Amino acid sequence: MARAPNYGHERREREKNKAAKRAARAEAKKVKAEERQSDEPGEAGAERTAAPDEAGAAGADPIAATDQPTERD
Image (cartoon, rainbow, N blue to C red; front, side, top):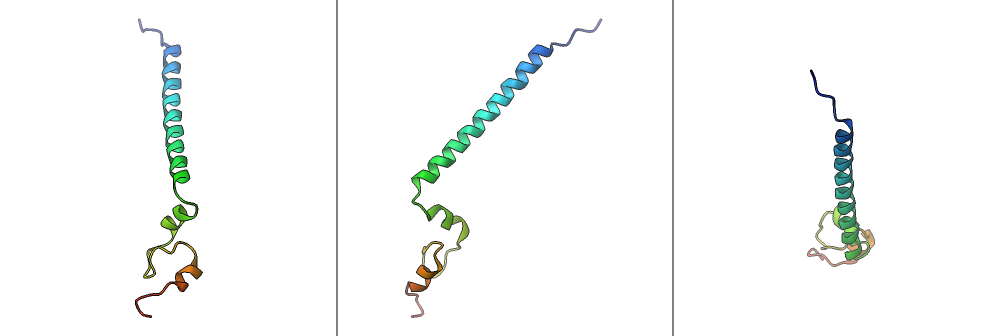
């Protein structure tokens, strides 16, 4: 005769796995938020969007990049 399934145990295991996944996501989100807080404003976005140019790390401001002297001047 087949054993009766233990639905309660399976449900608890699923809930435990979901809780662990939520905790991992919350921790990753918290770490990411702390990294953003530790960076200076405007610096984090500039690192991801702007490529390093000849003027150096001028950031995302194109006017500041044109005001900087270059090796060609």
